[in-house]
Image (cartoon, rainbow over all chains, first blue to last red; front, side, top):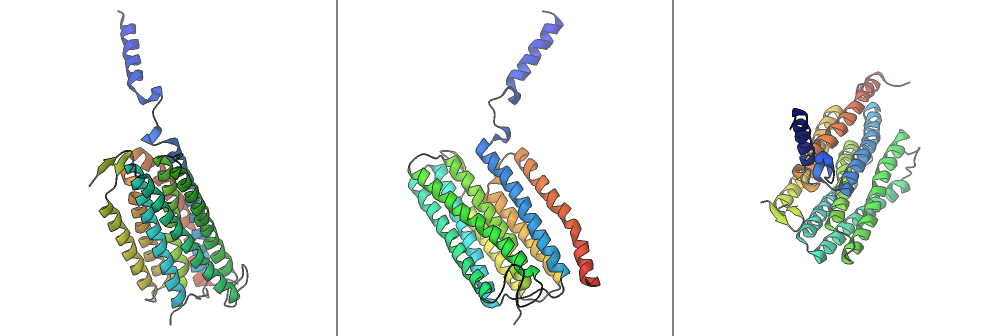
Length: 215
Length: 103
């Protein structure tokens, strides 16, 4: 055997053993999960851009309205607790899916959906209250017209994400109960739901707590 | 604390509930802070800091990233952090607006 053959044999042995021959998932996750993670990063950048644009005008405007009295802050705090709890029920759903407990998965998914709907209802109640007080997209009774634009823009986009999440979880719940979806699908939907909760972790302090009305 | 179910790693309920409790406690801290009437810049930094800690907890434990391959973490997180940090470049301008006023 020539040294050239030996090199070729060694090369082929290395290639045969390596992950580059194919059939191996990059990062050891399925393509659905990787796709969801990439989407989450892009959506996080979108929300980041909006939040930083809002923070920019919030810091740079001396007479920014402070319309959120204690009932509003209490309402927003309850919304935060509800969303955090729905994240826990979501994790428990993923956990149940990993353990193979199908009925528990559906139960926890329904609990998560109820959390999301509760959040939406409380939020819409607050929106209607503000609209009644005269807040519009580019006008409000208190000061800079940007208040309405930033508030409704940020929270509206977030609420849209929550609503889409509730629908998404409903589809997964139906699919799981009919044994059409796998635990990977539950986990991927869980990633989306936690992302929605994560964004709220930034919106709540920056929008509500930075503009609370002191007694 | 780490178990393996039918389909891979199962987190312990106790850990998840502990993380949940920490998130609630931090939320309570933030609400308390909101009523302390601190300077706006100070408020912003503390609230952002707390939010980043909460986000890290959610990403690590609820989104399971702590137990994923490091290559996945390094692909996703540095890019996100870098882009968000780049956006911070506007803040000196907003503080300037505050001190100079806008006509």
